[in-house]
Image 1 (cartoon, rainbow, N blue to C red):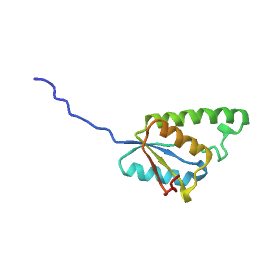
Image 2: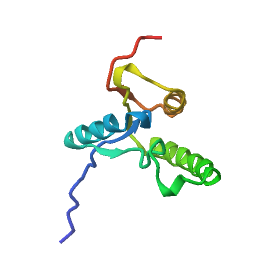
Image 3: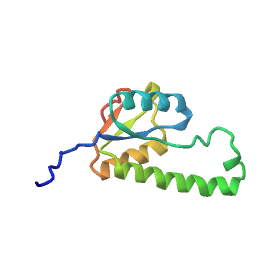
Image 4: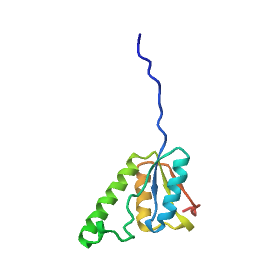
Length: 117
């Protein structure tokens, strides 16, 4: 008897994007996206908070570059990108990440409305 395959679909993957200065807002977005049955790819380090991993300035610079590259890889994997922008704040790094996501053709959502440009 032939083996029957059951079609499966995976949940959508969303990458979170936003300033780590709003770490609590990123965590809250992660919670809501997870509760909405989405796989969440989020920043894993908040280098604005002291930690032994990045207390050496030279190592911190290298780690920052490595983390930026890793984060772009998360956008590559994602089905969509959620910009976490409390109070409408979007910094320079987030603007670059939005441009990168757009270059990939990723749908982009925002936690707060943004003015049309």
